[in-house]
Length: 628
View (cartoon, rainbow, N blue to C red):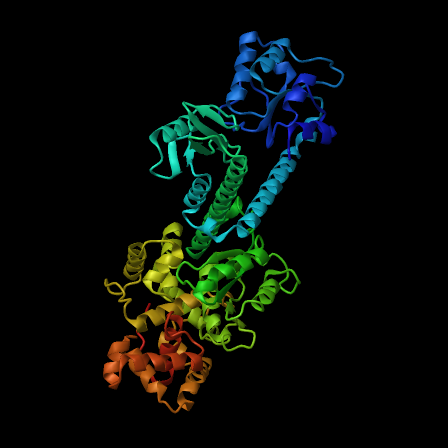
């Protein structure tokens, strides 16, 4: 642990020693978390001095009067400084002003002197921070390990009540868990205990008496035990009419330890959940295009994790009831190396953002670790994106979600999106020119507004507004308002785009895929190409025929169902009425088409966009609206 004694004994390069033997004996174990070297007295209020050693040039306080010295030392004590160190020249002898020495003794502030070069102190803060971090991590690990071995009832919300009731029943006397900080009786048993016993127990619990031995007050035998060493810790108090039996204190001590362990375990869980909340917030910022905010939000928890230019996103799907077990296992294997979050929109999904800090083929890389972990996670599939810039996490997430569907049909249930099944990369430079022309009104907005609107629009082209809201951590009405604003900006002839039309959403999805492609076009193409001309190119024709070929080969006439579903704007019930079959039959056929096309036609919209494009290219039906 980092203490003043550690600095004086283990760090001789800083030349620190206690002012005298009395200070050493009294303050050798005083914890210290950092240092502040100040040139001006009194110390600025803006500085947080808690648990920090304040270093002042001895010359700055050499002429301090008794009042000034007392004011300085008392200020340090009130701000919970770890101590005051006077920087003196080597061989200066006793350079401590008497007024400072007397004030430090009087107030109880540790007083030290240092003859070390200021440069020697430069790395001390980093050393101390490392020690504190390791100690906190060890404590958290120990608490978590203890918690896993506690009886199941301790994990329940009423674990305090269970323990207090059990002790009260065992001792056959009144037992209460009380907090003197807010004078509150947290838990007590039995509720019908004699009023005098309850009154005496409460009076003792809320008093400053710290004795742990049994005592008699007003004829009541009572004992008070702190749950922990913290000042604000609650006390366990037992009271009865008869003296305590020999086994009473051991039973009470065990209960106190269990309460402390359960309390610490609960705090550990809260810390874990808090950290997970920070990670989720950072992910939602990345999905919203707020890269800088995400980096800042995660900097304290995972320093340097998002300091990268390229990322790859993975999505793991599995039984929802087993997601927490999977998350715990994944955190143990890739914690600190990747951003891992529970999908806020799908209870069966886990999302990993790999910052690609090193080679993906290295044994300890995130990619290889995930492959090894997937081998011990039965019943799960994993889809991964192509590498993308950090600011394009939304596109990478969409690709990973699409790859997840085809991953189900791989032997190892893992698939990485390679773009070969996508239309956008096949369309050439002319398509990029067309797409940028269509999106120009939106791209011309101020940066902050543009990023907010485009990031939301890109996600709603693949997912519902409700799911988009959960992914972004925004209200559904906020998502709807942003999409409506996009429809106005991109509207034609003064009218907003009708984004409930699946055909128009498909065209806009293609536009966004081209504009935000991971690989930009080689060069600008001349002219003003139209969508119809772009989709007539040979690669587009071949892509569309290849996508629909499995439906042509199937004997169930799934292609007619697909045409009806698309013609009814993706409404299952209307398509069922048109085909003269039940809605359930249409859904079953769509699931069959998902396996043949390896596209998601149910939970996401990207598969529907591909189907609409393929139908439009091969048959001209549906007719796609021209934009731009």
